[in-house]
Amino acid sequence: MRIRQFRKGDENNIADIYNRAFHEQIETLPEIYRYRSVTPEDVIQWRRGGVNTLWIVETDDQPVGYAQVRVELEHGDQDIPVLQFMPARNWDLEQSNLAVLPANQRNGIAAYLIEEI
Image: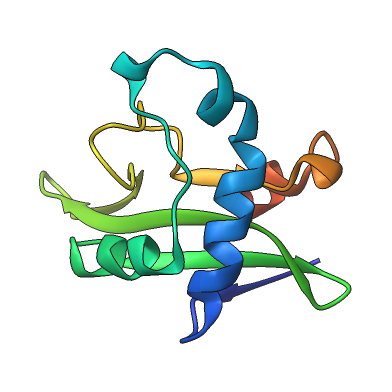
């Protein structure tokens, strides 16, 4: 596995990962939850909306997951950097901040992604 930061062009892969990872929610949850498929243009909007970093995890040079994060400094006796996972939109129940393709789930990929970033 390899982790890297978002590169131009990754918006297609991120939209695909999101749509496949959350397919069941998109298809079955009532309208009130507002789950819907996202497009590459939506991902571009997420980045304009204040997302500091999108991290991509790859296996065999293919993207299989992502995380949206930012680092905030908590001020106190010491300044401590705190990694914050972020929702992509206010309507997604804060679940789109970390996604792994269904075929790759339950293999430790999300845990690896969190540990490494």
